[in-house]
Image (cartoon, rainbow, N blue to C red; front, side, top):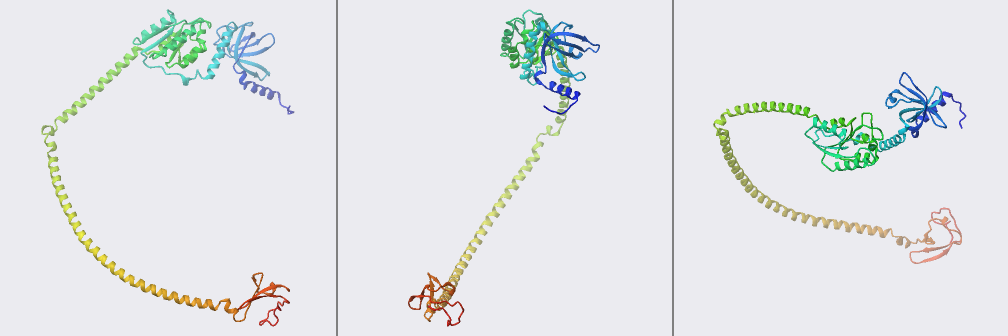
Length: 454
């Protein structure tokens, strides 16, 4: 445990940062009973949330509590969602509330928030997956309850805004246990057709009435669809899981119909504007081309077409004659040049051959003479070297009375190599013998009077 002394404010600030950075308690859902509820003139709410064993202070700011659909009071059982924080001036832990629901629907709301958080983390709500709506849908699939106000509102709106579209209806149950399965089957059927867009709508109701649109499999079916889906479920304040995962969410069924369809009156006005512009451009282009045609028609070559090619024909004939004449002269010159070159080449080859033969005869005589001279010089050098070799031969020296003394097959060059009683080999001009060393004198002697005694 650290022994460092810190201030109260530093400790409280540290605890605040640790609590607010803990992802496990961010967006936590808490159920409890309201007490000490106060609504200030600023619009902010301050209250406590308690159960049998504990109490926590809470604050809900005006920007958040406007979405609460009831007026809270002490004793109400509620489910809130928020982030844990610390009010540093008093060192109190508090819950900053972002949403509040009555606990009478708490279980459904809890399931809703958990599923919403799960699918959001998986990326099913990301804008990157949203498909773009077609500008002019010609086939619109409608998935809603049969004979409902929502169906009537959508059909009336589409008939008024975009009556050229073909409406493909898929009546389903929009509440109850079997409704989610029917909606899923209808959407899968729509996705096998050539519909341009699909409307999934339902009128308003309680959270229980709209619960089918919070089904997880329904959300995954909408996410996987090839055809873009527009939802219009309930009223503007109602948000279902289907709304979050759809490509476009409308506040009402009528709004969904308006979002997916252009206004035919606006389209007709635009087409008329395009038509008028096209007529203006076409008339201007026709007038321009007509003027050009008239100008071309008045050109002289249209009155006498042969003038178009008469000069070119004469020029072509002249060029053809000049080309043939030039080619004939060129061919004649080339042939004459080849003939002259052939004669010159033959004479030159004969001269070169004769010169080469004479040079070969001369070179042969010179080579033979040079070889004889070299041979004589080599013989003389050989005789001289043989005489020198014989004169310097060791045998010649021995024949004049000298001897070679060796010990252990090594020539003795100095008395220092010997010791008394050593045995040495002595080689003479003729024959050899062994001798023993009696005494040694290591001083130099020109004639050997004080030499070694053997």
